[in-house]
Image 1 (cartoon, rainbow, N blue to C red):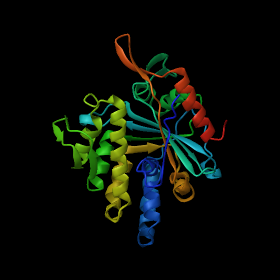
Image 2 (cartoon, rainbow, N blue to C red):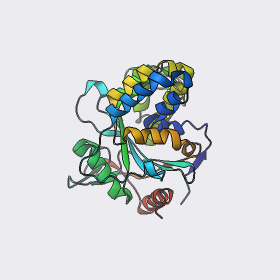
Image 3 (cartoon, one colour):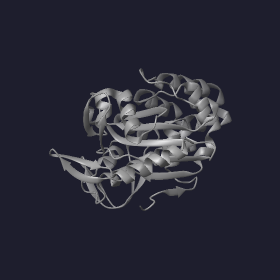
Length: 312
């Protein structure tokens, strides 16, 4: 099978996905001495607010020991169009962070992937696991599907995605082809987007010749652009708005000390990023559209993740 891995250098914006969701603000703010005093306590306060353990799961963390660890990254549609329900995981990424190899591996999981809902007794789309049982079911279901034991989770809802874009003053993207979504028109080429526009830009998939895989690329592009802005001097001056957007729209089971540990001691892990996508085949089952993952493709990704965690 073709190896779809793409190694990127440290300028790859995809490395910022992990940084912005698991400590990028700590790196950004703690690395600037003029802001070190009060900013440290502001960041620590935000870290405490977003930290939420998962009841019923054994803590397998190895972060404080400097060992490789895994994270389930979820983008929820909770805040989309003013909704206030639990939401589904519209974006799903599994990251492994390996300090021994100074490398991070990111695997995009299609939201329509057909898999078992562990603890619910059904087989549905991967995006539904969070809706049925929040962090625990999302992690338990992905554990079984990928034949591994995830260490941590981080989620941010779609309203938070919009708030983050606004907090950093908007983002610039390079659109591959013209399309319309949610009342907005996006011409081909460079577009400067506010939060509402960025959310619409990342939602479109039906007009994309690559379907959900094309949408994943746009989501990654916008997340990278958010981080680029946050890491700029302009972003630093707006750190309070950024922290507010994060603490109101994000949760993780990482404890504050673990977040600081990642920010300070795992930096080299983000200089090399291996980007992967779990590829499936579109199938209609009981009048529902799924991505069904071939056994050999699933085995390939399972082995890759285990190798990156030093468990194979």
